[in-house]
Length: 259
Image 1 (cartoon, rainbow, N blue to C red):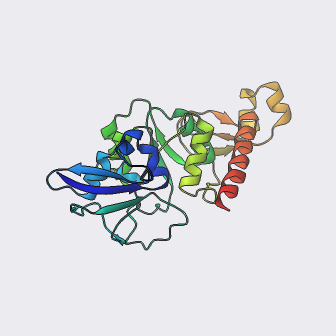
Image 2: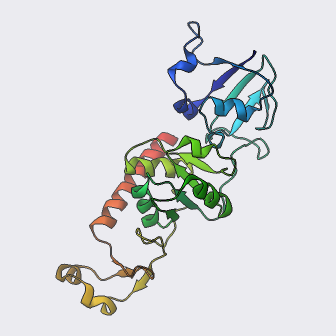
Image 3: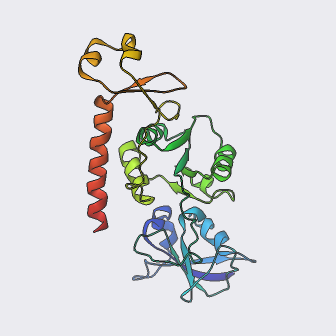
């Protein structure tokens, strides 16, 4: 059997279990030994630990960057890093691709509320509760979308390049994860989208939809938008205010963490 040492940094350790370190001696909790046979690439070895390649931004062997196709040799020590703001890398060393000009998402079936949040912020977000894994991978690849999922197996598909594994069970925290990971606080679109069908909302005059408004809405609100697909009417009511309050809390927290 061939042996190598592996050390995963930062958020990559979320994918590891205590079993990875079970055979370590005291003081060796930072790395562990992996045994393998035959020829294996860095990607083979990393994903054998349950860590998706899409979460890895840098691999160092003897202090030098290598890519996912590198054939690992016995006795080597792999240092494996996630995407970190303070990890300044040259473009050729980074394994995670840069963000596209327009930020777009596709989400798996477990993230419906997060999809609504992202749409309400204005991000083009594809979501259906019946997308299968192959369709999600295809959409992420062909339409240059960031894939958000709670399925690490999906993140290991070869088509998937730019993606993020959602940790939290709570949609508000999930939104914070996404905005922090991709540094999107300064890239939130001006125009909102329909949380139901994802179409960009269009401004509509109050007079045009007056017969569809409840009495209190008529009295207290003057600005309205309409979805051109599902025809739903939106205004800056309680849901909008709750989202804005949530966004302000997220901004304060991310800025505090970044200091």
